[in-house]
Image (cartoon, rainbow, N blue to C red; front, side, top):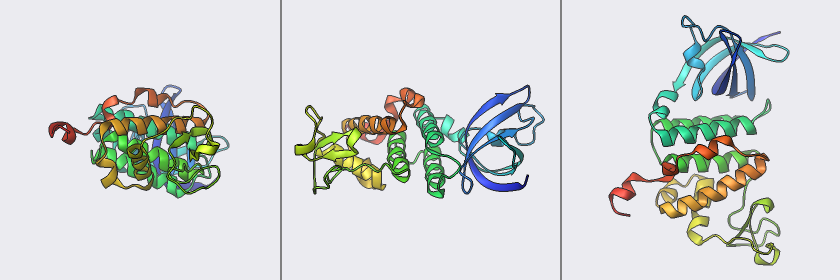
Length: 253
């Protein structure tokens, strides 16, 4: 059984026995990895703190039959401490890593890894409202996984948009003639924000109103949970203030 090395983000951990942990990670080259980190719960552990959620580490592992074993871990980025200082950012980060865990497998692409690292880095630096970071991550991660939504052209017929009827099960906006009865319509501002979050247009996204952000967030949550086939537990705990922009509040916007 060979040794191998990779960069990885820690998604979650579980206790194992008296001193060990099972660590679930998304790596750059080996996709999702589940490995045993022996002795990391002891106070004398050399790398226990490097294998906590939201941490990025250079890990060396010994390949096993069902679980690999972590033999070394060197910290590359410690995002956890900064993220934990802000409740809205922490709840957004929890939803992000849960989504990464659900979307990834051993064959996951490097794009999923880089997207995850970028989202956690941005949360740790408090660069943008955490809710916008979360919503953009969800749309882009789903797109990489093959479920890219359409916010302009009809997702069923391909008819050029704009269209306002949004159907989660059909993949986005649809033309009126194929929209099921009672399909909700999204306003122009919400569709513009959804498109901006999908493409990473932060100028447009950060110029949006808080009400528009809330509506877009609801659409994205529904779309995400439909494609993941069961609910994300972390989304229930995302702070409602996560999409709040202090600058807009202070200016009276």
